[in-house]
Length: 340
Image 1 (tube, rainbow, N blue to C red):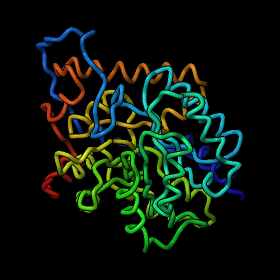
Image 2 (cartoon, one colour; image 1 turned 45 degrees about the horizontal axis):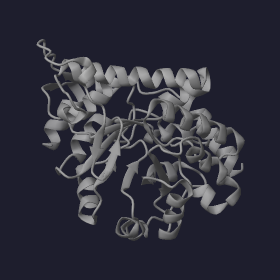
Image 3 (cartoon, rainbow, N blue to C red; image 1 turned 180 degrees about the vertical axis):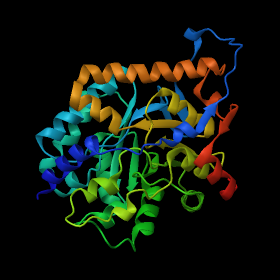
């Protein structure tokens, strides 16, 4: 199977596989406040996350790598939808384009369609410093995501097995890339130990990429003759991972993985996230219903988020942080045992 065919296979499996029955955002309840005091029209959605200025906390997260005309069309439509709704967008891994110049157009279409938008480049931790720089140049990107996906690589038959130089390579990137650098997990969440290590290295932006959304263990297992199903439920759920990773005031955490709607996004920000990404759920709308439906869905998510702000008397998204909430079930048990 070629790289392009594998990427298309990933997309199909990602939008079709079964999610977990229990979404851990349902373990979080924001305490209702009856006495609203704001004018809904005055509520502001723009945020500053470290050096990044975003028009809303929601962004389209990374989901498609190089895969020929089909993924080029997906990236084109995602970029147009991001432009029409005014939200940021991360592309999928650019490693294929860094190795094969013919793949570049499948990424460059994003900047072409959205010349003024906020766009995140994306490389794996196996990238060299020069490859990371080229990924940023390719998109005139506003930030760089470094994706971390060890378990996915281990299950993938053709995946990487040697991570002995990972720390050296990502240290090079944080030391020498001149845009904000975000370390992003891919469906398995980040622990407080991981967050602390990355903080000590100099990173100030993390995307926890927690368990609950696209499950790349299941996606890769669907491609194996004999699956490693023991790892289908491995990882830290996204709300828990936000709690784990939010250990320093100047460590900016994005929540992604199983965010279904604007209320989940608001819950993530109550727990300490500075913004939230959606990927698989948006891709499913685009593939099944088209770009107009995707634009409508994004507007709906933003409206839901704004309603949650109204109910908490939050004039700006950052004011959601620490609002009264209750933790239930699995998330509460994790919180208590880890003493986060």
